[in-house]
Amino acid sequence: MNCVFVQIRCKPGSTYEVADQISLREIHAELYSTSGSFDLLLKLYIPEDEDIGKYINHNMLDIEGIERTLTTLTFKAF
Image (cartoon, rainbow, N blue to C red):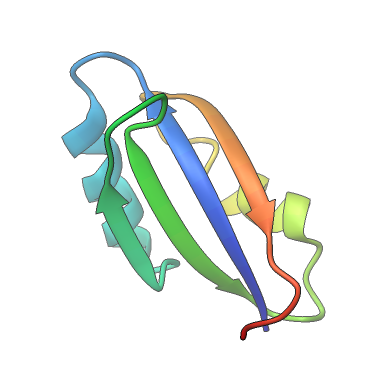
């Protein structure tokens, strides 16, 4: 499994709705509300045989209210 973090910027006033939609899809390991440039921080475990970009596009980016994302790939846990 590939551990990936996705920061999500939501359209103003839509953060809770976006979080609810992500939760309903049950694709996340953890989901946090954050301060700063992004509104949500999502931790995903993506199967090794899945293309990370396609997985995120297919499972998340059709959610209404998402304005921008920033994906961080991880390589090794210490």
